[in-house]
Image (cartoon, rainbow, N blue to C red):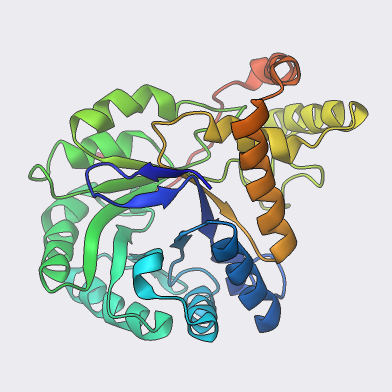
Length: 316
């Protein structure tokens, strides 16, 4: 598995990252034995980056991931672990007091002394000025205490990153985690990369399948995309099926093509899913992407290119 440098952190992360939200049973029940087998398979195949949050499954994802690490006995220096703070089952709370308490709770669940990255989770749902003036300074103190090595921010709207990064002291934020903006249907994250590089910030991209849009089974009922976008993605998936191809594989490969993205996070809940994602990455390295099929999919998706959906509150 290819390793890529994450911004200026010095961390070498696997190009495919293990998204642990499914371990929180958010997409269906995952027996602990299966979760352990999935994490073990990931490690065996060269995945070293694992991402979770207290929000996923109401702390279940963190707890299960911690149980997996303990069962496998993986050396701490062989894994890079990120978790989040500020978003919980009961709602959002980015106060200094809550995020300071949050990291201790997360470390207990994970069975770790520190996390490599601590993200502010979905910051568009609160005042960004609170993130700048209260949350990031609190996370810096957590970093100074050695409970988190690096600090990140996450969310859907891309303008949240420029707003916050332009207002915090240089070097305060090491990483951003963006989702649903580096896929065949929406690649707008690419436009932000020169800015992020200028700030010395590493880039993680999540959800290459656009939260289920680019799958054979289609998105869940709650998916916030427009009917137009859902229909176009369904056509794209059908086109792949007719050609005997998997849209999930080419969508994953498309996201991995951009070497400025350090790791592509994808949710996994079984050894089979791990194997499929790693196989897609290895096939890309050895054979490249199916350019003809990619062009056909881009043509199908052209009418909805870069279409997204609202998330969070209207920032003043």
